[in-house]
Figure 1 (cartoon, rainbow, N blue to C red):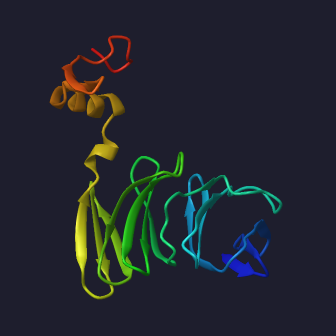
Figure 2: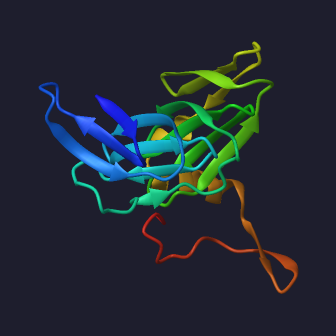
Length: 176
């Protein structure tokens, strides 16, 4: 069980014993337990990943970048260490839980209250009926496979203001 009180978030074991307590400024709007820890969203749109196994006095492991100034209303673990978050202002975003970078964002009409992952597809819907589907298959593919596909489609690089044909660096670990 999770509870917010007096600037802290507390997690309890089923028998009522305190598992962890984290300092949290602002007003909690959303919570999501993840493998990496506990994701906390505040009413100002801030999303923070906190360790899930330590007591108070710690700081967040990660603050997600470029979140809207709107309360998160739906959270979902995405593929390969990502997070999908829907916000009250209609923003839907995908963030890396490794470095906090925003990877993709779109806007729906109305608060994003429904999130569903089915296979490699993410389905999202707002409370006003707007909806979209993202194909997240590339996040589930091996890194080198995706990079090799990009290399095959783009042989031109910019050099001194000109487009030049250049193969990938032969020393790159993905170069075969």
